[in-house]
Image (cartoon, rainbow, N blue to C red; front, side, top):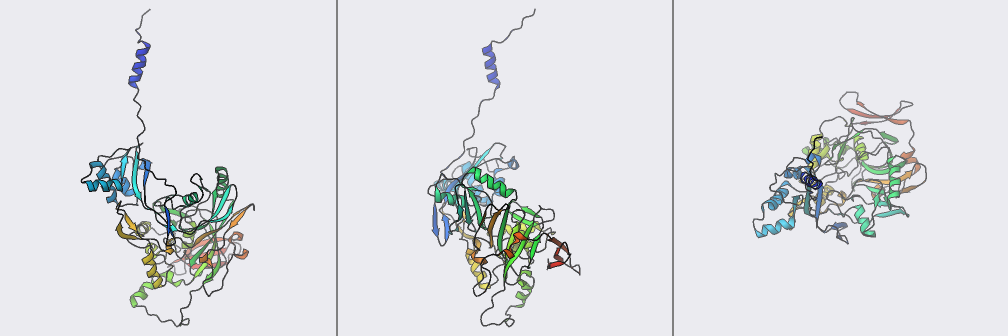
Length: 509
């Protein structure tokens, strides 16, 4: 029998150790104190403001970032700062200070590091598993100082009346100026509010905040399962058609970065029921009788105004809205498509973005890239001008008050500073008025917001009634068609009763 030499057990263990790669500890990341208590709020000029503070963002390398240069990632993925800011920030850390003064400026300005280590060049590439850390001097935009209203509270849930202009969660430029952080600051640092439904930052109205995970999950599932009736109220330009109006145009997101959506045949299914609550014609100017007002416009101004189709829609309407589906910006997009956008919507009622027709009846055009480009300039070199302000003096006032870059820089971090937002930028005329369980177990609602009440000197409803309730729409009114007019020159929106075929209303697209 042949004998085979065998390594001693101890030697085999040592050999196994040699082949096994050495353990590498996870990379250190930059952390800075970013949870001050109490929160650094202060109230000024009707606004809730936050003192600037240092904050560190830590994020793992995303799949789409792999193999890309660090400066390319920051320049294309983050819109908060210009590219020059990141170039200088990374170069200072990579190459060291040029002067003592510059070193101090770099430290105060913040830094960008990968896996806790300075990068050798701005063209350094990132790979899977890398942790990118960016410490900066954070400037939060102000929000309204209006308190968060409490509609109902019990042991499991708080039903709030969310103010317009305040985001629900910390996101983008907002952190402490969010519903979650404001409510935490009012109650206790350890309290964890759990939102159950979502409202856009610019929208006000009913929101549900869970006090414990079980209650929050239960209501969230109920809302997602479409077993909760939702009703909004909006103020739109022009005289909205009477009766039950249904819009079933699919909605597509054309820019995730800007959060921009449009009516598109290839989009996701969307359905909204509308019913007009009131229409208020424009107020007559004093010392002028109707039809006798002098036209003092120049020829150039007449030509300009003739191209602005929205200017023919005088006055405004208060509309009750019942979203059957829940697409992002669904109500705003559907009202725009119907030719009656929300009158102070800085996006969907903005001629500088969508052109003279404001995209009424448009579900087919291929100008998305132009619209995205125009919208991206709003609030930087230009003011986001909504079409609600027909009066030239009011328009000029709002231009001066609107939030835009001031041309000044922060003394600590060189961040371009914005002016305070005007009152018209803190929200839009869209309010979540009522949420109700379909089984009738609960129902919560708020009064009509001030902008939905009759203008001074005019009569109109100050509360809603069952007769104007879109939740009670008859099933036969459900057909919305887009076709050509008799001359084939343009589009028509027609809504008919599917049982009788009677055309209820026709709107030029």
